[in-house]
Length: 306
Image: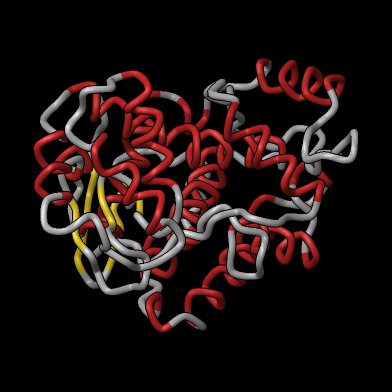
Protein backbone atom coordinates (compact mmCIF):
# COMPACT_ATOMS: atom_id res chain seq x y z
CA UNK A 1 0.00 0.00 0.00
CA UNK A 2 1.43 3.34 -1.02
CA UNK A 3 0.88 6.50 0.91
CA UNK A 4 -2.14 8.41 -0.35
CA UNK A 5 -0.80 11.88 -0.46
CA UNK A 6 1.93 14.43 0.03
CA UNK A 7 1.31 18.05 0.94
CA UNK A 8 3.50 20.73 -0.58
CA UNK A 9 4.51 23.57 1.71
CA UNK A 10 3.28 26.62 -0.16
CA UNK A 11 2.46 29.25 2.46
CA UNK A 12 3.63 28.91 6.03
CA UNK A 13 3.93 30.83 9.27
CA UNK A 14 7.44 32.26 9.37
CA UNK A 15 8.74 30.27 12.32
CA UNK A 16 7.55 26.88 11.12
CA UNK A 17 8.44 27.48 7.49
CA UNK A 18 11.89 28.50 8.58
CA UNK A 19 12.45 25.06 10.03
CA UNK A 20 11.42 23.36 6.82
CA UNK A 21 13.23 25.61 4.39
CA UNK A 22 16.45 25.52 6.35
CA UNK A 23 16.37 21.82 7.06
CA UNK A 24 15.34 20.77 3.56
CA UNK A 25 18.46 22.27 2.05
CA UNK A 26 20.82 21.33 4.89
CA UNK A 27 21.90 17.77 4.15
CA UNK A 28 23.84 17.66 7.38
CA UNK A 29 22.49 14.26 8.39
CA UNK A 30 21.47 15.71 11.77
CA UNK A 31 23.52 14.19 14.54
CA UNK A 32 20.93 12.79 16.90
CA UNK A 33 19.76 12.34 20.46
CA UNK A 34 18.68 9.35 22.47
CA UNK A 35 17.07 11.51 25.12
CA UNK A 36 15.92 15.07 25.23
CA UNK A 37 18.34 17.86 25.84
CA UNK A 38 17.59 21.56 25.95
CA UNK A 39 17.72 23.30 22.59
CA UNK A 40 15.67 25.75 20.58
CA UNK A 41 12.57 23.80 19.65
CA UNK A 42 10.99 26.61 17.67
CA UNK A 43 13.27 28.57 15.31
CA UNK A 44 12.75 32.24 14.58
CA UNK A 45 12.58 33.73 11.08
CA UNK A 46 14.56 36.87 10.37
CA UNK A 47 14.86 39.53 7.69
CA UNK A 48 11.16 39.17 6.96
CA UNK A 49 11.83 35.83 5.26
CA UNK A 50 11.69 32.15 6.17
CA UNK A 51 15.29 31.93 7.31
CA UNK A 52 16.85 31.34 10.67
CA UNK A 53 19.50 33.64 11.94
CA UNK A 54 23.10 32.61 11.55
CA UNK A 55 23.51 32.71 15.32
CA UNK A 56 20.60 30.33 15.91
CA UNK A 57 21.79 27.99 13.17
CA UNK A 58 25.29 27.84 14.62
CA UNK A 59 23.93 27.25 18.10
CA UNK A 60 21.67 24.41 16.99
CA UNK A 61 24.37 22.87 14.79
CA UNK A 62 26.81 22.92 17.70
CA UNK A 63 24.20 21.37 20.00
CA UNK A 64 23.33 18.60 17.54
CA UNK A 65 27.00 17.67 17.16
CA UNK A 66 27.17 16.85 20.85
CA UNK A 67 24.46 14.18 20.57
CA UNK A 68 24.48 10.52 19.52
CA UNK A 69 23.32 9.84 15.94
CA UNK A 70 19.91 8.42 16.86
CA UNK A 71 17.88 7.57 13.78
CA UNK A 72 20.72 8.86 11.58
CA UNK A 73 22.92 5.92 12.62
CA UNK A 74 23.19 3.58 9.60
CA UNK A 75 21.52 0.62 11.31
CA UNK A 76 18.65 2.71 12.69
CA UNK A 77 18.10 4.44 9.36
CA UNK A 78 17.94 1.06 7.65
CA UNK A 79 15.45 -0.12 10.27
CA UNK A 80 13.38 3.03 9.73
CA UNK A 81 13.22 2.34 5.99
CA UNK A 82 12.03 -1.20 6.63
CA UNK A 83 9.29 -0.09 9.01
CA UNK A 84 8.07 2.54 6.57
CA UNK A 85 8.18 0.02 3.71
CA UNK A 86 5.97 -2.30 5.73
CA UNK A 87 3.31 0.41 5.82
CA UNK A 88 3.89 1.82 2.35
CA UNK A 89 4.49 -1.42 0.43
CA UNK A 90 3.58 -4.29 2.78
CA UNK A 91 7.20 -5.40 2.54
CA UNK A 92 10.45 -4.96 4.41
CA UNK A 93 12.38 -4.75 1.14
CA UNK A 94 12.41 -0.99 0.63
CA UNK A 95 15.19 -1.22 -1.97
CA UNK A 96 12.83 -3.09 -4.28
CA UNK A 97 10.75 0.09 -4.60
CA UNK A 98 13.13 2.22 -6.69
CA UNK A 99 11.28 1.09 -9.83
CA UNK A 100 7.80 1.25 -8.35
CA UNK A 101 5.34 3.56 -10.11
CA UNK A 102 1.55 3.64 -10.38
CA UNK A 103 -1.45 5.90 -10.00
CA UNK A 104 -3.18 4.70 -6.85
CA UNK A 105 -6.22 6.90 -7.44
CA UNK A 106 -5.54 9.36 -4.63
CA UNK A 107 -5.60 12.51 -6.76
CA UNK A 108 -1.82 12.94 -6.62
CA UNK A 109 -0.99 11.57 -10.06
CA UNK A 110 1.69 8.92 -10.27
CA UNK A 111 3.24 7.70 -7.02
CA UNK A 112 6.76 6.38 -7.48
CA UNK A 113 10.01 5.30 -5.90
CA UNK A 114 11.26 4.49 -2.44
CA UNK A 115 9.29 7.11 -0.54
CA UNK A 116 6.24 7.61 -2.73
CA UNK A 117 7.28 10.68 -4.72
CA UNK A 118 4.24 12.04 -6.56
CA UNK A 119 3.84 13.82 -9.88
CA UNK A 120 1.15 15.99 -8.31
CA UNK A 121 3.05 17.09 -5.21
CA UNK A 122 6.26 18.68 -6.50
CA UNK A 123 8.75 16.31 -4.89
CA UNK A 124 8.97 14.07 -7.95
CA UNK A 125 9.57 16.86 -10.45
CA UNK A 126 12.07 18.48 -8.07
CA UNK A 127 14.02 15.24 -7.90
CA UNK A 128 14.02 14.74 -11.67
CA UNK A 129 15.17 18.33 -12.16
CA UNK A 130 18.13 17.85 -9.81
CA UNK A 131 18.94 14.49 -11.35
CA UNK A 132 18.81 15.94 -14.86
CA UNK A 133 21.13 18.78 -13.87
CA UNK A 134 23.75 16.19 -12.92
CA UNK A 135 22.86 13.68 -15.66
CA UNK A 136 21.41 15.61 -18.65
CA UNK A 137 21.01 12.59 -20.90
CA UNK A 138 18.85 10.53 -18.56
CA UNK A 139 15.70 8.81 -19.78
CA UNK A 140 13.33 11.03 -17.78
CA UNK A 141 14.66 14.41 -18.91
CA UNK A 142 12.33 14.61 -21.90
CA UNK A 143 9.34 14.46 -19.53
CA UNK A 144 10.34 17.51 -17.51
CA UNK A 145 8.04 19.96 -19.37
CA UNK A 146 5.10 17.62 -18.76
CA UNK A 147 6.07 17.05 -15.13
CA UNK A 148 6.16 20.79 -14.52
CA UNK A 149 2.79 21.21 -16.22
CA UNK A 150 1.01 18.53 -14.15
CA UNK A 151 2.63 19.51 -10.84
CA UNK A 152 -0.15 20.15 -8.33
CA UNK A 153 -2.69 18.14 -10.32
CA UNK A 154 -3.63 14.46 -10.79
CA UNK A 155 -3.15 14.74 -14.56
CA UNK A 156 -1.06 12.38 -16.68
CA UNK A 157 -1.08 14.72 -19.65
CA UNK A 158 2.20 14.51 -21.52
CA UNK A 159 3.35 11.58 -19.39
CA UNK A 160 1.41 8.72 -20.93
CA UNK A 161 2.11 6.28 -22.34
CA UNK A 162 5.89 6.26 -21.87
CA UNK A 163 6.68 7.80 -18.49
CA UNK A 164 6.11 4.73 -16.32
CA UNK A 165 8.33 2.58 -18.52
CA UNK A 166 10.99 5.29 -18.54
CA UNK A 167 10.90 5.50 -14.75
CA UNK A 168 11.32 1.74 -14.36
CA UNK A 169 14.20 1.68 -16.80
CA UNK A 170 15.93 4.63 -15.16
CA UNK A 171 15.60 2.88 -11.79
CA UNK A 172 18.16 0.36 -13.06
CA UNK A 173 20.75 3.16 -13.09
CA UNK A 174 22.73 3.43 -9.81
CA UNK A 175 22.88 7.23 -10.09
CA UNK A 176 19.08 7.44 -10.21
CA UNK A 177 18.73 5.24 -7.16
CA UNK A 178 21.21 7.52 -5.41
CA UNK A 179 19.13 10.51 -6.50
CA UNK A 180 16.05 8.99 -4.89
CA UNK A 181 18.00 8.44 -1.67
CA UNK A 182 19.24 12.01 -1.71
CA UNK A 183 15.79 13.47 -2.28
CA UNK A 184 14.32 11.34 0.48
CA UNK A 185 16.96 12.68 2.84
CA UNK A 186 16.76 16.29 1.70
CA UNK A 187 12.99 16.59 1.73
CA UNK A 188 11.89 14.17 4.46
CA UNK A 189 14.48 12.41 6.59
CA UNK A 190 16.87 15.22 7.47
CA UNK A 191 14.23 17.88 8.28
CA UNK A 192 12.13 15.48 10.36
CA UNK A 193 15.05 14.01 12.30
CA UNK A 194 16.70 17.36 12.88
CA UNK A 195 13.53 18.90 14.28
CA UNK A 196 12.85 15.85 16.45
CA UNK A 197 16.29 16.24 17.96
CA UNK A 198 15.72 19.92 18.64
CA UNK A 199 12.45 18.91 20.31
CA UNK A 200 14.46 16.61 22.57
CA UNK A 201 13.20 13.34 21.11
CA UNK A 202 15.13 10.09 20.98
CA UNK A 203 15.32 7.54 18.18
CA UNK A 204 11.68 6.45 18.34
CA UNK A 205 10.45 10.03 18.39
CA UNK A 206 12.70 10.84 15.46
CA UNK A 207 11.15 7.94 13.56
CA UNK A 208 7.62 9.03 14.47
CA UNK A 209 8.35 12.49 13.04
CA UNK A 210 9.91 10.97 9.92
CA UNK A 211 6.98 8.66 9.25
CA UNK A 212 4.56 11.55 9.77
CA UNK A 213 6.56 13.72 7.36
CA UNK A 214 6.42 10.96 4.74
CA UNK A 215 2.71 10.27 5.10
CA UNK A 216 1.35 13.77 5.68
CA UNK A 217 3.94 15.85 3.86
CA UNK A 218 5.72 19.01 5.07
CA UNK A 219 2.60 21.16 5.24
CA UNK A 220 1.51 23.65 7.88
CA UNK A 221 -2.19 23.02 7.40
CA UNK A 222 -3.86 21.01 10.20
CA UNK A 223 -3.19 17.65 8.53
CA UNK A 224 0.35 18.49 7.42
CA UNK A 225 3.37 17.52 9.49
CA UNK A 226 4.05 20.99 10.90
CA UNK A 227 0.37 21.52 11.64
CA UNK A 228 0.26 18.22 13.53
CA UNK A 229 3.34 19.17 15.52
CA UNK A 230 1.92 22.58 16.42
CA UNK A 231 -1.32 20.96 17.59
CA UNK A 232 0.61 18.49 19.76
CA UNK A 233 2.72 21.27 21.26
CA UNK A 234 -0.46 23.13 22.16
CA UNK A 235 -1.42 20.19 24.38
CA UNK A 236 1.92 19.03 25.76
CA UNK A 237 5.46 20.27 26.22
CA UNK A 238 8.19 18.60 24.21
CA UNK A 239 11.10 17.15 26.18
CA UNK A 240 13.13 20.20 25.15
CA UNK A 241 10.47 22.33 26.85
CA UNK A 242 10.53 20.23 30.00
CA UNK A 243 7.83 17.69 29.13
CA UNK A 244 8.14 13.91 29.11
CA UNK A 245 8.91 12.10 25.89
CA UNK A 246 6.22 9.44 26.34
CA UNK A 247 3.45 11.93 27.08
CA UNK A 248 4.33 14.23 24.21
CA UNK A 249 4.64 11.41 21.66
CA UNK A 250 1.40 9.83 22.86
CA UNK A 251 -0.42 13.09 22.21
CA UNK A 252 1.33 13.58 18.87
CA UNK A 253 0.17 10.10 17.80
CA UNK A 254 -3.38 10.83 19.01
CA UNK A 255 -3.51 13.98 16.91
CA UNK A 256 -1.98 12.27 13.93
CA UNK A 257 -4.41 9.36 14.18
CA UNK A 258 -7.37 11.76 14.23
CA UNK A 259 -6.02 13.50 11.12
CA UNK A 260 -5.66 10.16 9.35
CA UNK A 261 -9.16 9.04 10.29
CA UNK A 262 -10.62 12.26 8.91
CA UNK A 263 -9.25 11.39 5.47
CA UNK A 264 -10.97 8.56 3.62
CA UNK A 265 -7.63 7.57 2.12
CA UNK A 266 -6.08 7.05 5.57
CA UNK A 267 -8.71 5.03 7.39
CA UNK A 268 -6.29 2.26 8.32
CA UNK A 269 -4.20 3.55 11.21
CA UNK A 270 -2.35 0.35 12.08
CA UNK A 271 1.00 1.98 11.30
CA UNK A 272 0.26 3.92 14.51
CA UNK A 273 -1.92 1.54 16.53
CA UNK A 274 0.04 -1.71 16.23
CA UNK A 275 3.46 -0.34 15.39
CA UNK A 276 4.55 3.10 16.62
CA UNK A 277 2.30 3.26 19.67
CA UNK A 278 3.24 -0.31 20.53
CA UNK A 279 6.93 0.67 20.49
CA UNK A 280 6.12 3.66 22.70
CA UNK A 281 4.11 1.69 25.25
CA UNK A 282 6.79 -0.98 25.33
CA UNK A 283 9.23 1.73 26.37
CA UNK A 284 11.38 1.09 23.30
CA UNK A 285 12.48 4.68 22.83
CA UNK A 286 15.71 3.60 21.11
CA UNK A 287 14.07 1.26 18.57
CA UNK A 288 16.19 -1.63 19.76
CA UNK A 289 15.92 -4.95 17.97
CA UNK A 290 14.50 -7.53 17.80
CA UNK A 291 11.44 -5.52 16.80
CA UNK A 292 8.02 -6.90 15.91
CA UNK A 293 4.93 -5.03 14.78
CA UNK A 294 1.76 -5.36 12.70
CA UNK A 295 0.51 -3.29 9.78
CA UNK A 296 -2.80 -4.06 8.06
CA UNK A 297 -2.98 -7.22 10.17
CA UNK A 298 0.30 -8.58 8.82
CA UNK A 299 3.13 -9.24 11.25
CA UNK A 300 6.64 -8.00 10.51
CA UNK A 301 9.81 -8.69 12.45
CA UNK A 302 13.40 -7.50 12.30
CA UNK A 303 15.79 -9.44 14.51
CA UNK A 304 18.94 -7.55 13.68
CA UNK A 305 20.18 -4.91 11.26
CA UNK A 306 23.77 -5.14 10.06
